[in-house]
Length: 325
Image (cartoon, rainbow, N blue to C red; front, top):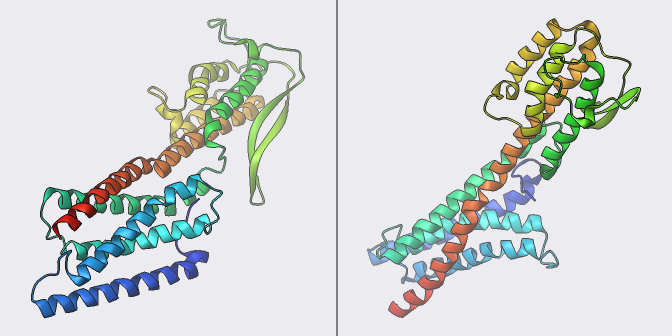
């Protein structure tokens, strides 16, 4: 579940921003006053530094609770959106608090250095993830109108390929030089119609449709279509972008390829070529959806391990700091 900052959520975000800014300004004012009165940069053991350290540590512990909160949905401790919004804004508030606790990064010792480095990396990875979640869903909505369930992308492509294989086998003349280019699914079963999975966008409503295509007899002059399907399009539909098939993965290159195919094919095959072009476009959208999905969730592979490392370092830092206090 994503928290999109701005738009309709701006009133909720504004409350967090104002509260976080007021807290940070208050802490900075107290820190500056102690700095001025003591004549030295307050450290973690100073009054303000200690308060900032405790507050920052509690925020970090709260941030870590988001993961069990997401896993245990039976917890009725606020909505997931509220937790995510608190995770974002409190995490940003922790930055000035931790910096003041660490004497504005004038820190010593390998433990403190490791702790601050990990903390800043966690913040940076979290900001990067927030950036991705702000823009990638919109990109997905605009550029992948044929979006499907991520785990089903390859299955849907294979199903579409089987449908088209039957259609090509029924409407295109055979290739005498490639007698084995047809699989059992493409054998003529005597049907007068073929069902092809398609995609339509009508009055702003998008969705998949099943289209029944009449099948009469092979169309003369369609051997180039048959060869194109089995040598180029079929491998692309099954495997997506791969070495040697980069052309179909490009919208412009695929358009040129299908334009050339139309030029050397009879007019009666125009509908068949349209189906092939649409399937190619949907496979291209599926590949883009998989890339966006990996971008959208891959950052967690960095953010989560860093967060766990931060928790471990914090658990070591607290007793060590109390020991030498």
